[in-house]
Length: 294
Image (tube, rainbow, N blue to C red):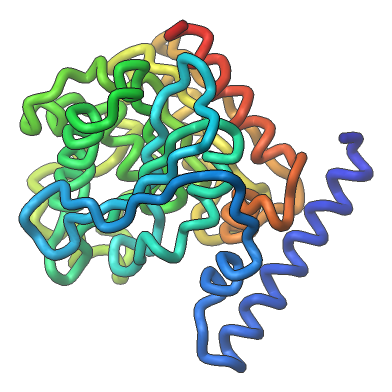
């Protein structure tokens, strides 16, 4: 895809985001519901509401392709929502898209504020990974943690701070890579009124920031960020990339012209974008991990 085509595609995505937002306001329904409604279902098996723990929100959905890519890892996707909102069913389009490419995909719910504060939702993520490692045979090839926005923050902490998997009695080696879309890896939550209560009980702000742990290992990372993102600015991904590179880390960073905070998420829908930079970058990254495990 050349630059002109990519620019046209990006403009189309942003236009769709605006249209979906208007539909939400006028019709009283979630734009993600609309994305799921028009998302195409390929040959796959969906297993819903598997329990990974004892809490009400400790449930996950599994999307299993008819033909699993040889040697492929399992992808665990954590949705965003400012650590306050979100439902796994709203992100079925992500499971459908990734499974259409041959990857088993798991989408969990996790506890949210105000029911819990940091680090409980990250601890829930570690429980998800433990469940996947123990119950999905394909996970022997590794688990790739993936997320958007607050979900990318959770995924990054799981991948970089080994303490969460240690508590879940799992080795860090069960994670083979991390994919982050528009993640707040370097932000200080105490600087924002909206996030202060979510992180109020933490002893050290550095513990909340994935960039703190950028030198903890050489796990492959794929970071994607839209240059039009004004909600989580691209400097978050740039800082994580810089710190990881200083430690000889394995980081691929993709900046996307004319893409905002929510349009990058729409890039995971196979109804809108079949061959865009978002999906192709993710697929290449996952295929490289499949080759390594093979």
